Amino acid sequence: MRFPKKFLWGGAVAANQCEGAYLEDGKLLSVPDMLLGGDVNTPRTFLPREDATAFYPSHEAVDFYHRYKEDIALLAGMGFTCFRLSINWVRIFPNGDDEEPNEAGLAFYDAVFDECAKYGIEPVVTLCHYEIPWSIVTKYGGFSNRDVVDLFLKYARTVMTRYKDKVKYWLTFNEINIPCMHLGGLSALYGLGVMEEEDINSDHRIPLTELKVDKQRVFEALHNEFVASALTVKLGHEINPDFMIGNMIAHETSYPLTPDPKDVLACLDVDNFHNNFCGDVQVRGEYPAFMWRYFRENGIDTSFITEEDRKILKEGTVDMYTFSYYMTNCVTVHEDAEKTAGNMTLGAKNPYLKASDWGWQIDPDGLRYTLNVLAGRYPDTPLMVVENGFGAFDKVEEDGSIHDQYRIDYFRGHIEAMAEALQDGVNLIGYTTWGPIDLVSAGTGQYAKRYGFIYVDRHDDGTGDFSRRKKDSYDWYKKVIASQGEDL
Ligand code: BG6
Picture 1 (cartoon, rainbow, N blue to C red):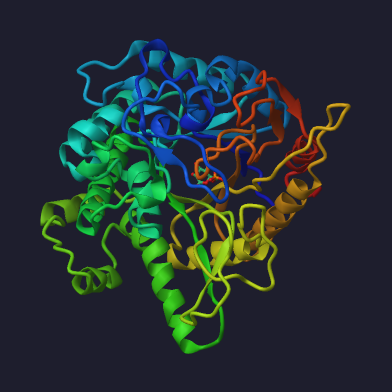
Picture 2 (cartoon, rainbow, N blue to C red):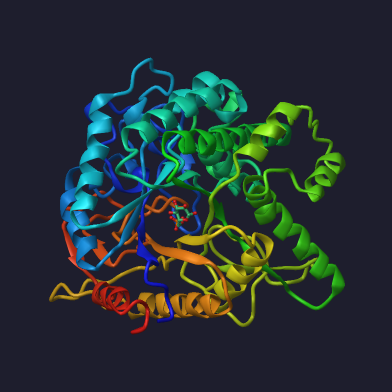
């Protein structure tokens, strides 16, 4: 067998991208509820109040809130052994700082986890997948306010205690490193709940690419998230010593575009700043040396990293390193190099790779490479790929079938790469594809950017009846799981 017997096979979603029911059963607004959709060339926009005339994709999303039984049955039909999902913080503490948790919200996740248990599916739960309560942004300034660490811990304690016998695998913050990948903009708001006063009080719609956030504030907020994450790891182990608690990194694997040593060094810097900084803090429990240099050279006052906090980070290192992997990018100092075209463009175009319609370069070999690099850096920490997938336009044929061979090809390559990495000796414990059921794109807010094995009839103009149908990839992934990755 190329994959271990206990290997976790499944898919991953986020509450804000699939649940909908945005004001039901006591839930209030979270950050993604404030964002309108865009597309590959048009950034999502934001207005700091609800606009009754606008279409907000997350408000109904794909209605998982009402259809979770049907959806989990469909996932079970593919043989899922795990299902990654997030708890929507605002269903539990609608304002973020409520005295008591909202029982209706807690009951919803009880029902979801019970449904998973019915099929022997292990939940992998993200505590915060961008679902920062909106009132924490406006009232506290997001994670740049230290009090929010306590609010998060109260939320973590509530759900970890409630579900201690139903959930074993927990992730603290989704893609905690995105504020390093794009300083300001969407990532500071999504990841940290931080935006400037001026934008919070804006009376006009702002493209997310134009939100500006002070660097000092970003690093302070990120530090508070590190502390919140580390304290959650400690707390979780007190609640149930069997918990496996992980971090979650958006792994942006980079290659030097040319053999020019300057490109190699530039690539090293990008890799360190984008990936290794947060990974090292959460796995090794300390800020890496290159970050002290970065702080010095960028005039960041580091007095917020206190001795006491350094102890907390050391005591709250994660049990597993989990990450998303979609694409790779090239780094170069040569200004005439061609850039990748699309949303989330992070670097130079790799002439050997094809890209999706959103400009994301497809690179299965890069996954084997990434797994090996991570295993070398964190030899004692199990790895899990918790997001990987191909966003594409899908066509429904007249007979209702959907022939998504491009998606099968994408997954085949990446699963093959994981099998190779296992042969290389990498301690990889599981794999969850992104969006096994179509959902709202985080980057563009589109429904049209589809990832699922299961198609959802819902469109960017707000039409569609939310009905589900299987794509060709559904039976293919079922076969892959049934054969433990042998039959690709
Ligand atoms: C990851 C996020 O960055 O990528 C998900 O954790 C997101 O929330 C996924 O949906 C794919 O990105 P996008 O922009 O295509 O939805």
